[in-house]
Length: 296
Image 1 (cartoon, one colour):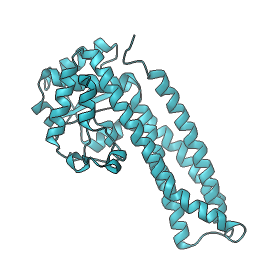
Image 2: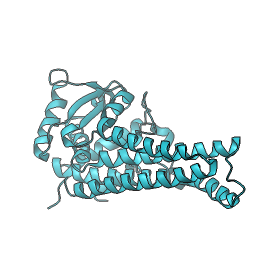
Image 3: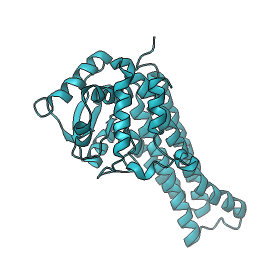
C-alpha cells in the first residue's frame, strides 16, 4: 500500500551514494588541481573541506536554512489553526510533529528542512496564511510532511553541497589558469589543461541539472504522497493555483535553498515557458502539478 514512506529507504541510500560520490569526485578534482599547480596542499585542503561540509550540512542544515529565510518559531497560541493542522497531519502520517516556523513575507510559500523526522522543521510564510483556506493549507502542510517522511530534505541538502562545492572548485581552477599555473604545465599539461577547462565549465552545469531534476521529481512525489494524507487532492491543487497566480518574489531568497520551497521563491521571473527555462527551473510548472493532482 502506498504511503509517504515509500521512497524513504531509497532516499537514504541515494544520500549515501551522493556523499560517497562527492568525496571521490572532490579527491579526483583536488588531485588534478594539485598536480597542475604542483602543490599537494590543494588536495589536502579540498578533502578536508569536503568532509567538513558533509558533517556541517548533516547536523546544522536546518539552522542554516532558518537563518537564511528569517523564519521565526510559531506557537499554538500565536497560530492555533496552523499548529492544529500540523499536529493532526503528523499523527496521521505517523511522524513526530516537526518544529513549526513562520516567515514574515507576503509571498505565499512553504518549506521543510532538517536531517531526519526527529529534527524536522516546517515553515510557512504569512503570505500563504493570508490567501489559503483550511483545506488548502492542509494540502500544503501534507506536502511538506511528505518531504519529511521520505527523507527528501537530506538528499537535497547533499545535492546542494555537491553543486556548490563543484562550482567553487571550478572557479578555483579557472583562477589558476588566469594567474598562471604550476610547474607541470609543460609535461603533458596541454591535454590536461584542455580537459580541465572543459570540466571546470561543464561539471557545475551538469551538477546543477541533476540538482534541479531531483528537485522536480521530489515535488511531484510529495504532491502525490501529501494527497494520501489528506484524501483531498483539490485542497493542494487549489493551493498551488493560488500560489502560482500570486507570483510574488520572496524578500529573502537564495538559489541554494530554492528547491526546498513548495513554489519557486524567485516568483514570476522564473516562470517562463521556454524549454531552457523549464530545464533550469527548480520546480515543475504549477499547471503540470495541478493536472497530475486532478488526474488530467
